[in-house]
Image (cartoon, rainbow, N blue to C red; front, side, top):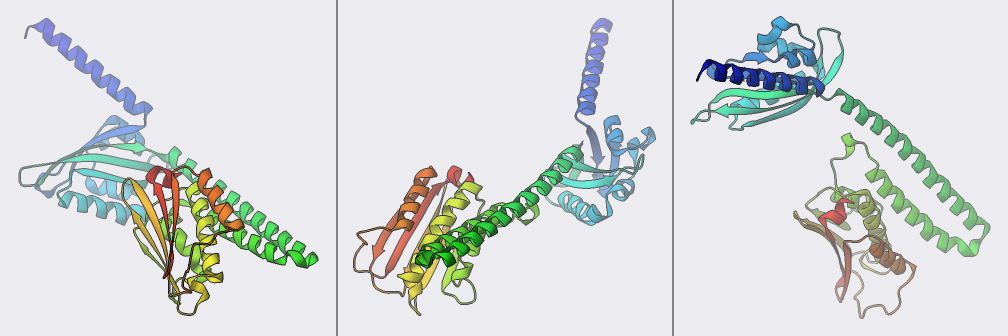
Length: 340
């Protein structure tokens, strides 16, 4: 390669490095490499990494222990354990979020660390290359969202309580409406439980559809009494689907208490959840109750409400089978419908 070509290549390389540095600065992203050979952690930090972590230029080859000390005390054991476990495994991907306390200004910042681990043919770790991204703004926005969501949930819970109180007051003033008022109040309670489920904070949101069913059916003997059993594979469920399924399950449970399996001392209800990547199914099976001689010829308000609820939520399908041993109902939904 002649001198002009060499100079041109060096110019392009320098321009590319400057462009990369600018992008990292704008995105608050710092690059790093860690030499893992021999079980040692020899670090090389980019200038942008030093800015993100609030470190001086001479910390470009900081010791592993310096990084550990910078991690927030509440996150330190978790993050260090995850790092060592990943390096000691066969994994080539590393990702973790944690807080640091920056030495330069004492600020607490949230870091998203993502990296790839190169390994030799025996799986021994050789090199870690990755990036640290300052995600403090996102974390602060999430915390603000959680605060607003909790306040909104509290206000909606108060609205449910006020409406239920108004229904009870009206029923006392008009005795002939008490039966209707009791049914309305029960439906409001089911909606309230569904709202409380979907309005949980992120830290509480581990449970999905099975958790929702457990909450809805708890008043009907789910748990220690063994009258209602819930089984199957859990998975996430969106607010619209949760409200829809809450209304359907509430009507099924109410009818089971009045006419079906739960009207008998020996009757039981089994609710099974089946899910895969494409769809989900909820099966409601009643056994041990009064024998069913034929399908009902006339539906009440509850049946009408269920039909309208199904029509309003596209992607849900409901099927009844009036078996002599007890009612069998299936609720089928696509994954998209369950996520809404």
